Amino acid sequence: MGIMARPIRILGIDPGLRRTGWGLIEVEGNRLSFLACGSVATQDGAALALRLVTIHDGLRKVLDEHAPDEAAVENTFVNKDAAATLKLGQARGIAMLVPAIYGLSVAEYAPNLVKKTLVGAGHAEKAQIRMMLGVLLPKATPQTHDAADALAIAITHAHHRTSMLLRVAAR
Image (cartoon, rainbow, N blue to C red; front, side, top):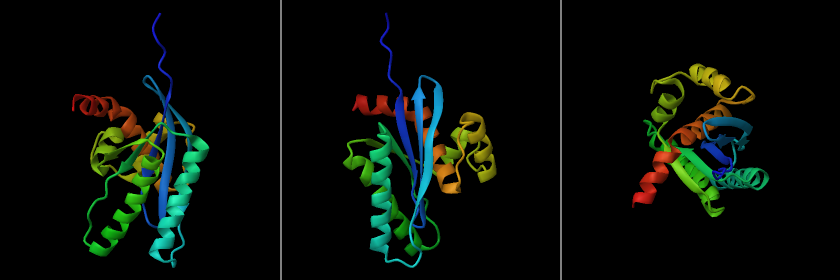
């Protein structure tokens, strides 16, 4: 008699200073199930440190409520505005720190890999990603692009986690 592997809960995080999206899926074999999604919004005029605290506290609440097993975060892309890139990097640091504090492994994925995994093309539009989310997770109803992107990141991790785990084990 074979050993049944338990389902794995994956938290995808789309870091942002205005809104950090999160999406939680469950993976059992090849089957993906939608569990929850949302976003942590910060106050536009607030000081950077307070916005980072809001992201931290919001993600802690998600981890406390949903107890994921693994986390995945989208890599920051560098844009022309260095100050904006730096601030986004700080939000991303919080997005990686919180699951790490909870003892979760945190994988990182480039935006183009997320798009390629879901749609088959690395330069897919948000509408195409949303359409594929509807196919892969029909019960998912993300209210924001950030939450939809976070679900896409979680799905990407579900597809790539085995090869990532093998690479870590080989070290």
